[in-house]
Length: 391
Image (cartoon, rainbow, N blue to C red; front, side, top):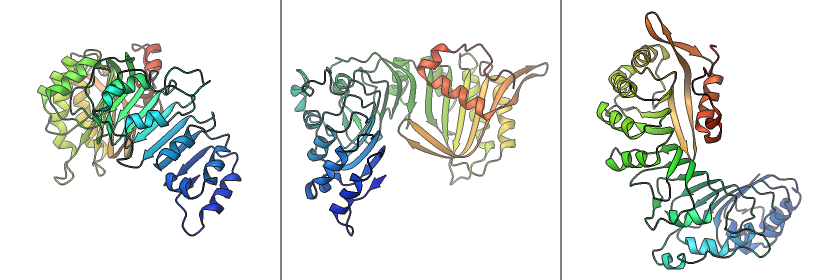
């Protein structure tokens, strides 16, 4: 259920409507701060919702933070878009005490001031009396940070149980002392404009949303040594980059590449044959068993010509046992992304004439990729066992 700041209906009738939706599980309210200022009953109505699981509030300020701190303990997911330029990390941690059961948190427009460094050198703001927790968000497992500064050394103290981190294009890392509680993260999605912070030591699935092919990028990959690597590429990336990348990522088992095609040049699969062969040669001496290649802005491509090139790819990339190709339009968001277009999965099969591609069930391929990307499931997998049982 969604609410936009009412104009014609008036505030009071909308608040009354909320009072009648006691079983509501998802709630979105836009311009929440203004609503609370003009109609306090909105806050009472929201607090009366005892079955809420997910909330999304935009235009949030001090009144909204106070409200969220008193939400039902059933709330697990919180998305909070603050008014731009109004709140720093110190303000947030001083005013915001969410229920301890929140597991997924998305924050937008939180500022970081250099003067706050001294404030955070000591103990963090104390939690609410009687809640028995030792950090502000002890149970948050997934954190998305959008449009703001990201003081990683503070985040590591505030979110000690974090497993998944996403930092958007318009967010900036801060550099500071390494006093982290983090050792290993399951997934990090970010844009590596500089070295990853020292608070992040190991990552199972590293997802790079925008790649600038610099030494810092390779050093960051080498530092966290991912098992799964997702990145973006284009036809200009050559064999030397792929070779350097594979040397820096010895633990890599799955490579997920989004290829940014040039729609103005009307590129075709033929334009990517050399690119595929360069990648295949770089993979030949690795442990990478699964490769997914998604061609973005390639809506008009047919399967047949691309499959012919992928057959040459699999003949060279001998460690690769599972291969997926997708053509269409990729939409990036947080930890996940979507593709509109066609998708195919194949497995490599050795024959007297060499390695060939065999069709593979789409469902089995997607299940394989899901298991590989899940750090806990990955540890239970027998990577030498055929995943599709020959089907």
